[in-house]
Length: 358
Length: 189
Image 1: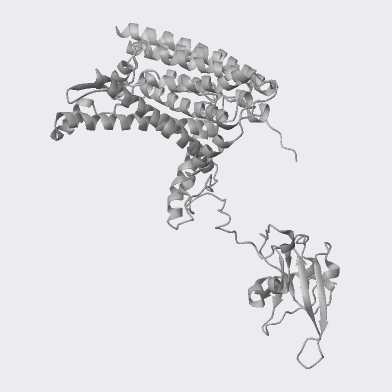
Image 2 (image 1 turned 60 degrees about the vertical axis):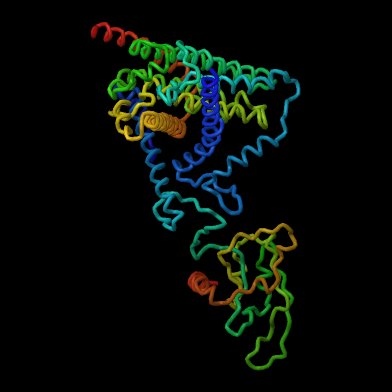
């Protein structure tokens, strides 16, 4: 029992370290540097320690110092309690979703069964969407409690956009559920061992729609009408400063990792390497002994999983720095008139094909 | 001739889905990204040409300006280690910003010696507008616009340069001298 607890603690610490400790801060740097390179600029490279700039990586440290030392400003007439609560509501769901996301398969290490997911829920996928939609409250409350018209407009846009795209997202997932017949994320991942059983081949339309609506859920360009800086100053977090602003920022970046992880599990074969099944990989490390071979395969699978996540984050960044922002009515039109009928058609066609094959 | 935009372009349904346009755009940005990323690594090893980036790391790297560029005005120091200036005051008069201040002195009038010379020659770069009129007015080829433009001080008084700070050996000003002779020689005064 104690060993199970210890393993769970290690997994929780690993996930927190890799999201909050690695991805969230490094992505702030990646976003600056990647956008700079795409636009033929140099990018952030001025922060240095003893004349050593490390390609601008020290900007992360200076950002953190800046955010922690800035004045935490609450505007006059704002609801102090809700104003403080809002960034927490926005950040916590982004972290919580990682509880059910598997970052590797199941391995036997020294007689101990290790399942690389913190909590292997039967309704994992449903849990992800239930928790992720809670973040909407954070954004809505943030805009409402700031006593600022820009913020209120931003949060109204957030609410309508999130509701519109949540529908498409849910309906796209139904196609994946029909194909794999399970809501358990570990089982969906395990079902994609062979390359041509990956979700992107079985549900190509579903992947495109899921990707689009996931970016819309995360409120990034081209769907960034809620925080459109040229229209609404900064949208729902106009009145935030210091670490509270940083929490909104961190929520956005962690959500990018979440989106990457979910798309990896649903459409990109989770932790599997193309054309290389787990059994083959195990036999390749046979000379190490049973437990060490399992350990090696586990490390490779975790590496592959986060490699795929990194690739999907790169794709999100490319989309963010390529496409211009949609007008508000275009967002609504795309959500309700194009993506929703398409996702319904996707469900219908998937059903017909499954029925025909059986 | 006015350029008319044809807004009634007939697009196929595939074009109207904007998927090819989106993919093309992403391809272009990705191409720039990878070109620059692999141009960046050799950049730190000393190979600079392989990147597409036009911006420069300013204080470490500087741009080579064309010879016609007007930077801060400097005084020419000739081969005899003396300023070309004869303290005639034409630049002082030509200066629209009144930033030049000359205190003239007279020599005894011996052979091979300038009759007049500047005792003090001050240019206040906080006032100077880099117009180049002083250079144009000078009959003795004594004042020239250099290619330096980054004169920044924490104290406004330090922006006043005296003669020692202004003098530059004439060998460094050869190109600009040539350029000025060609340019002002064509004009009919």
